[in-house]
Image: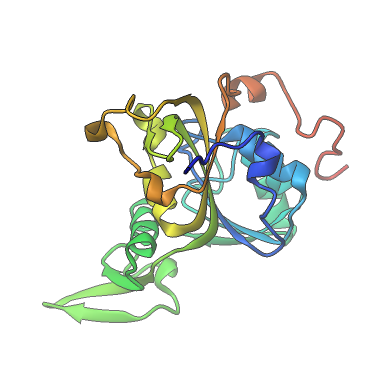
Amino acid sequence: MIDKNISSCAEAVADIKDGDTVMIGGFGEAGSPIELIHALIDQGAKNLTVINNNTGSGRVGLAALIENEQVAKMICSYPRTANSLVFPELYRNNKIELELVPQGTLAERIRAGGAGVPAFYTKTSVGTPLAKGKEIRNFEGEDYVMERGLKADFALIKAKRADRYGNLIFNKTARNFAPIMAMAATNTLVQVNQTVSLGEIDPEHVVTPGIFVNRIIEVTNPQQESQLVKSGVVYPPMRTKVGE
């Protein structure tokens, strides 16, 4: 019997190892799998390459993973936002590597990786420092930059509902990068607000089919990143802040 439900976030992330590439869903707070990220901090894997839209906020979630010096490289579109307290300092001190990718290009690189497309050409970044060292080709009189598809060892994503097969539906904009990350990762780990019986999800409403999902953990009351940041929460609670 196929049943992808597991008992804890710790069990979900147990197989992530040093040096792995990890995609983490979320557009800012929307769709950020906070509990899975915190479990990864507790698990301790280091030297990770993380692919995300940004670098997190405050000292929780992705920002906490970075502050704990478990991330060697970030591939993202927005390395600094209003509440970026961690990444800028580490980057200035050469403690973390950055690959900056325009947002549309990032989404397409992930989608291409999941679709088995090794590379594609785009006009985005032509004539900018982001095109340095990349192949440029001319099509119909216009220059295009070659971008490579992105794949990962693991994807950590958040969904609204799942059945035991791993069929997923999402909550509005919390969907963002999650479906394409699930396709581009060898192992997809999902925290969901609710698990339901087979047949309770209308097949026409399924966004990510279970074939792309490996493990599901139900988190009925997930933490909200903005509330944690506003409250000044640091994860893990006793960790020394960067620079201290």
